[in-house]
Length: 406
Image: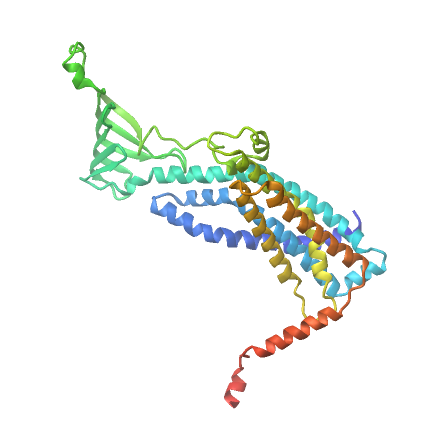
């Protein structure tokens, strides 16, 4: 690797890493409020908050990485041009075509990282976050328990005569579960304790020294028929009995019932044979949307460099603002196209690949023009003049000295 390559990559890495950290903190801060509200509302631990936020990091990393890479390139080339370093590089025989090579290699490496994020980490992280939310909210009714009062959740009724303040220890427990036409189960115990095997696993109630009564479905009809001699109920004593809160038969669904929880390989395999409940065009929209986002990484250097060098002799530089506006617009267009393809209103090639082609072709044309032509400062001066006139029409803020004189 040449000195120029190491120098450019080092200069790009600094603002890029800073932007990634700032973006992750900003994106996670907004979601942290929701997660904390959810966890605290359902009496979860602080460890659950950090675990659930960890599941969201791959998703936000996929959003922050392209923006940070773009900002790193734009700020680096803008500084090199402003301080004359880029002119020295050109004088030594290193043109933009040569300088962009290591950045292009780095963009392909980042595209591979993005592919791993959207293919593996994001689907599993999204599923884990939803499973954690399910496990947390399923254990939620511990907040509803009160001493001496009956509490009914779904088809289960609970009553605890003596409940501790943290609702983890209880005495004289009564539990009844059953629906019309199903077996009825009644459990009484001298004492009980709430346990959790994992931070997002369902809460388990461990009962001590009690009775379990099972009344089979249809036992009253059997009593008047030929099976009159059969026992109509089963009574068992126990020293220890474990049961889950809520509905013990209900578990979170398996991964893959939502196309956003599937890996790239699973999407490719299921594109013609989707799982139940998922339409083929939904699979194709998700697959093509991820591929477009991966392939957009190598295009960013061709857009960032012209924006950084387009106003060398101008009074102000608007490359960062214009570049971020273009990135946001491109992301919104891709999201809209993916939504239209997901609803089977447009084919994927028209909704996703046409906007990507326009974006890539426009960036490549802008880079070639910047690398092969001498910039014309007249448009920059004209734009500065027009913006200056517009600024003069706006009300100006008066300083303390001017206010005193007035």
